[in-house]
Image (cartoon, rainbow, N blue to C red):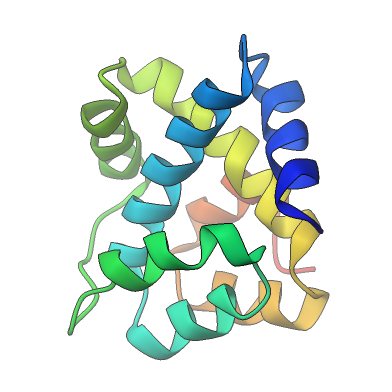
Length: 129
């Protein structure tokens, strides 16, 4: 998926006013996601993202992944966007559903296997695909 297509999908799913807002939300969600994943998983994810999105996850990755649940994921996104956790839940869903459509099924399964089960719903999946 091309960068403009990725942002258009995020914008549509999140019902954002413009591309700038979709970019801000995408950056925040990918930053938080990357801090939650081990380095090799971030690198595999980045390999399947549009070129313009690759730098954000690589900069946000941690030597050791942080351990936090879905609620804290939303709180961290809200902190980065200046929004509320409920809004961040919608933001995360818009971006991560688009990520799920962008990466291969095998990569998505590997990604989800690195996260607690509650994360699958944020990617628009009730469970591993």
